[in-house]
Length: 117
Image (cartoon, rainbow, N blue to C red):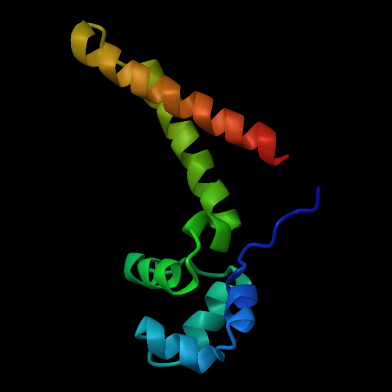
């Protein structure tokens, strides 16, 4: 399977016929430079920009920015593993709830990773 692009923003923008300055205006940016940066995968858009992009193109963030999504998932997996190792078992009720949640996150991310490759 081919490696996905860091960002599919350019593809969606062009498919809809928007120029970079036009998309920048819709996102509330002063110039098109931020759009160009996000298209290259060199920057991650703000939450507000993500909401606008999702609504405009009717596509999820993870489909627009797969590389950033994978990076976030990987970081979450690392942090979840660390937290699982440090759980305070002197408070078993709270620790059990956290453990179930963190293990569910770990299984889901592991499953997604295996099925993307």
